[in-house]
Amino acid sequence: MEKTPDELYGLEPVFEPGGEDAASLGGDLDVDCPYCGERFGTTVDLSAGSQAYIEDCQVCCQPIELRLEVGEDGALAACVAARIDR
Image 1: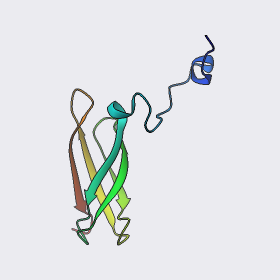
Image 2 (image 1 turned 90 degrees about the vertical axis):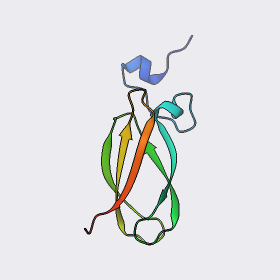
Image 3 (image 1 turned 180 degrees about the horizontal axis):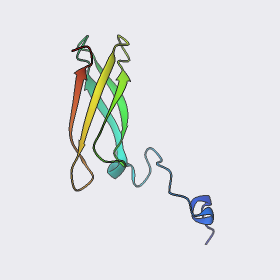
Image 4 (image 1 turned 135 degrees about the horizontal axis):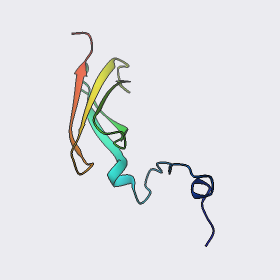
């Protein structure tokens, strides 16, 4: 059996969207913009655990703070989209 480049060089595996580990590492998520109210899709990476980061709305371009809570099982437990101007 041939080794993958990750195995050959001792690297951490890369997240491949749609791959066999995609459900446990993250995936697509629909977010309601707290500015314009429009819903847009984004991709989240849950491999780092609970986190917060800024992402611009794909509709109105306003900056949104996304706070992701990851449960003990590694699945997304909660996602909060908040305005950063308050």
